[in-house]
Image 1 (spheres, helix red, strand yellow):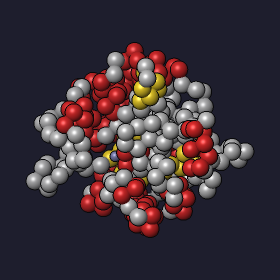
Image 2 (cartoon, protein in one colour):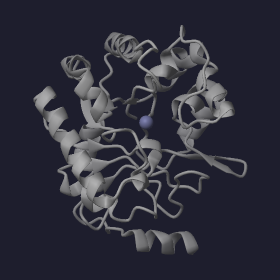
Image 3 (cartoon, helix red, strand yellow):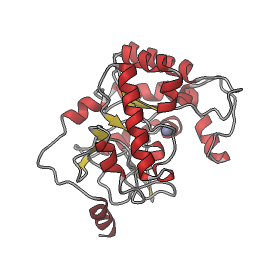
Image 4 (spheres, helix red, strand yellow):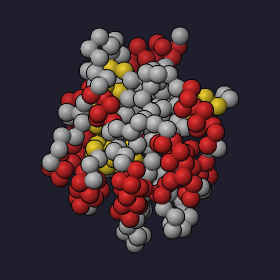
Length: 279
Ligand SMILES: [Zn+2]
């Protein structure tokens, strides 16, 4: 189990208060008090505008990874622009942190069959692993047929798919901040116990999951109902996380990924994943 957070600034105008640092500091204090080391995937433009945020995360002992350059779904970029942007983002994070940056996470888990070029470009930019795939059908960006356990892409990139569980007919990414806040704890704990031994469990929280003072507003590129789901239950966030994390071992995703690079794993292409989905 690994604690990960996607660090992005969702303001739509500079008139709105900058609240990312405040919330990240809360999370860093909470992790420090529990001796938990995790991974923060940071948007490149945010790192550029607030490099001290990156340094605070690294100084607290955590891993930093890239959460794209502008927090836009992969398919909204040309392959050329996508490759250039993630290379730029990785170099920036390495310059600020003074550490190698091994991990990439696509915004909205947007590595799908519509972006078959992405794994090779992520590897080409120097990343060792990706955590960018939702291995289920989804109205937005799922990749049905993808394994729910770690796998290698043909280019050698290691993919750590988003943890999912089945509830009735639905397959849901139950360790996302919204699910952690809103699902009854018994369901989350049961889902964790049911996971395949080879699965790698990671949370994907956001700074706003911890924001008790922010007033409700509709988020950019987000519907009204989803914005409400992003807003409800924030007082439960730390207690729920505490219950999950107390039970499990916490390491950065890089540490976990380093132990997983099995040379004899069968690499997958987007084509073979489509075949698995059809089977
Ligand atoms: Zn994001």
